[in-house]
Length: 166
Image 1 (cartoon, rainbow, N blue to C red):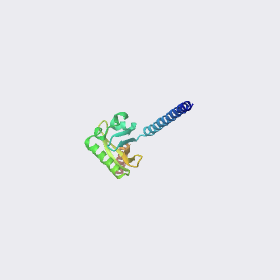
Image 2: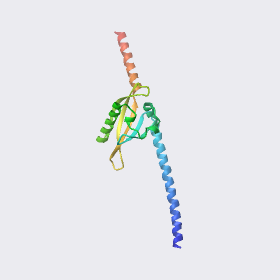
Image 3: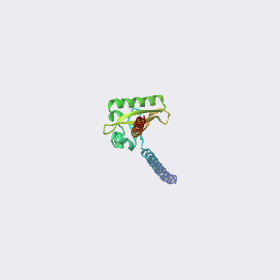
Image 4: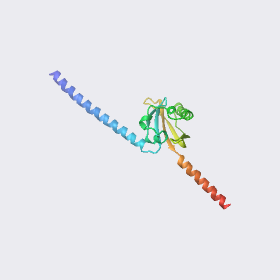
């Protein structure tokens, strides 16, 4: 009798554990889908790297610079994606953010897939693990190239108008 009750409890416990596991897996898939929707819903490039500088997460906007599928970026470092001088500057900024544990913002030029330079406003943030230790860096990069070209065109037009009126 005790064994039979124990078996029933064991069966009930297994069913309950299986239901809890399925619910947790569904919630995890929904959270991953939400995160992907958020980062892919912006025109800004979003990425997360580990302490060694390997990409853990990238969004579709990263394709503009790298011309690589998002999935192919995971596990790579900047040294594998950019010329040495650019990769070294990126790594130095990453180290500064991770060492200081505070965000920073700067502008940097990158060659686009066709070789023309593009200017980005880059905001980097330290990434913390569950123990509160810095375990990597997160970045949001906004392409300023078109805005800067428009500003330069406007300045040139204003200068031409001033010259005409003099």
